[in-house]
Length: 126
Image (cartoon, rainbow, N blue to C red; front, side):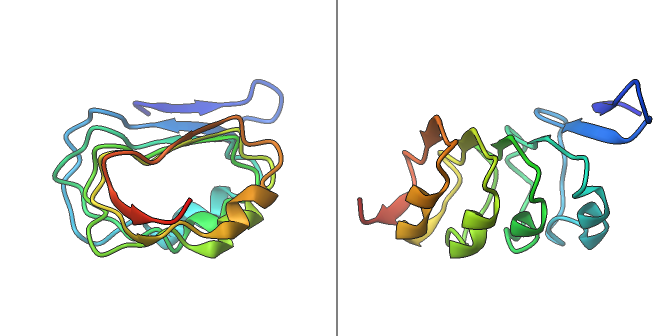
């Protein structure tokens, strides 16, 4: 499948990269995505400006190392404090996505986080 990568050892899905794929919809991320939680390490959905999504499923993807959802329509969403469950997250890109609300202080608990891009949103806090 386009943009889906599986591991060579066990053929489990490790990467989903649907960036700039002209995704459209307002249903959000399908709950079935949580079935990939044990093996999914990279989820990139960026540059899909007509894609509206809900971030609530993201904390269930506990093995993510890289999450990129910039330049999508997250209007009405806030950063869920449950993102702290993504303890292995190294890269988080959510810029220019119409996010609002406060930046959860719990983000500092993601100790492996090296890259954090939140600019060009309507976020508050530091």
